[in-house]
Length: 521
Image (tube, rainbow, N blue to C red; front, side, top):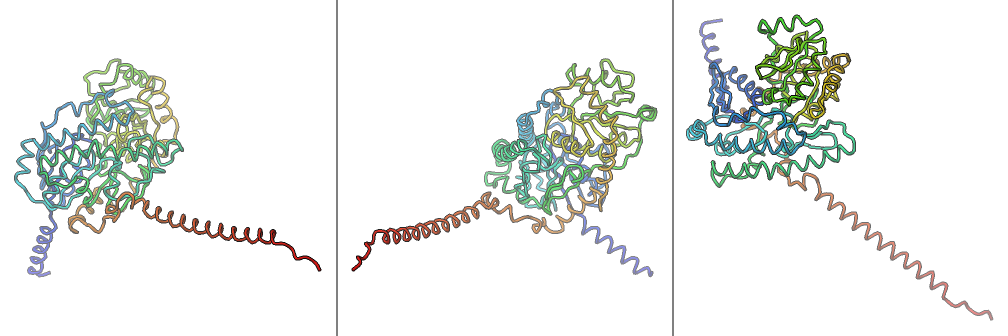
């Protein structure tokens, strides 16, 4: 190849790279690190492809990343948000979760918009090709998106929230689609379906009054009184990337602008364990049980009776137990239990000696377990954890341990059920194979659709016409009413015709009976 052609190819490649490089902003003010993992994975992946990424979050990178810019919100929210005592949230009541999410969402929006770093950013009025938001507990920052006149997409770090379906016009059938906050799967009894319908529709109303109205008030305060309702802005969401997968979280109908990317944050385990962790796990002749309640709940806030129930149950296992425990000491700690304040969870779960994962049922951690082929004991505490654990129980890869009935016997029974019944491990390996069998990795899938949304100016052709319909039109109630009226008119006409014919026949018959007979001569 001549030097001139080689030079031309290099130039064209450079031009192509520049024209395909987008400026992408991620607005991610939520304080839960488990939620942030999904956004971080996508933004890092986009930065690695040459896009200029700006991340507004509570979790700035510790070391600089090429093409990745942080705008830190650290200090904008009080510390209590990420230090939740167990008994505060583990009520099992939906209203506890809803009130907590609404409170955090409101405070989060208010504190974010009044934080100096955010004020400076908003005032700069920087332009982007795409904005990424989270579809969770507040739409307040959609006011900024609207003001920028920029295409935007959303992330859902859980299965779809109950109020997410309407903004995309996606089918939402409570007969087989279990509610996000209930212990319901895709196969429900009649009472469960009744409850599911009531909660499914009720939560949409709750969102309107408890989440949406306060968010609208805040958004108008920061972005002007002329701002349209946030629910109307939300209908322009180009794409939703959902952290779920049909193999693990049960199949449901999804429109083309709703894409499952469950496991987007997953990376193959590197097995770079510290010396003490490696020795502890490698030396476990009967395997290891991992116990972690995630990043938001502090395990050392267990009430003493429940903590002791685990301690006593673990002491009777032949397996070793690795317990994520934030405290410096664990009262009554058995010899087979090791406590750590932080776990390299993917590396640990990927170790062949790990037999069981005891979890609160958060989607990030349980997806990691499924990716690694590890069965689970689920202790759902709040939010989507009940629905997640029910899904895993139906898949045969987990059992449920009710938080309110925790005792030595219930803990031991749950642990032994999974450890001694080989079907759980067999099912976990089956799910692992299905979860990882995809044409593209979750991250590559998310990157493709993100770039697709930019290339096509927000990809309006992906949106369903259902979002333009009134609720009675979507449910065909107007059509049903007209058809019912038509049938009623036809039946009424038929009734009057039959009645008239019957009346005429009866009259003729009566006339024949009353007509005098002719006398014989």
